[in-house]
Image (cartoon, rainbow, N blue to C red; front, side, top):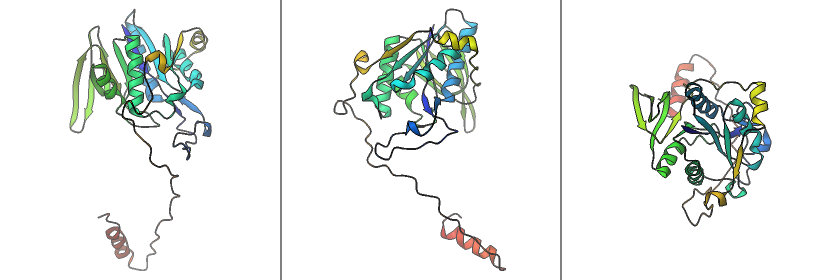
Length: 258
């Protein structure tokens, strides 16, 4: 069985995250970049299955700038057997429609049995990419899973719902996404870090995938404006002079909070 895991390099959530006000894109120079934690958890799901099932090949797939090799090497150090890096200058600022088209083309090229993703990234937080991939590929999908069980011909798991939980299943090939209810990824040890330097890392361009970034050929999201978040305004202070309760009620009513 071959499993593709989508991994994504994102700005470190513990550092500064800023937008470039000219391009509207994340300013990667503003802080450190790391593998998104949810994609590391997705990798752990695949590796846990591989540990118990000989012959399972786990491949990390990422669409990222050319300088993101270190993040992909981390995925290899954690345990992926190989990695595919889609890097092309034309993909800077790609919207979800183009991203889905490109990743689907890379997945078709690799012909995996199963694709595992996180439910949403910590930078864009779109949450729709797994479903878009399944649509492009014509595969079944099972999203937002809190448990995962992979077999030779299918996958099943649990999805949380407002009134309880749902048990879902799908035949392979399929696309699944997982939530933070799944375990943390294993930490890469020294042996894994050294081995990652020798593992295959294939770099692909749009030409290799026969995909065009030309917006005239397919609908794309267009950014119309970008602005810096306004500074937080000072709050309203209510001084108790015997009528604090009345003032509080008046404030809540004026701001339609009650």
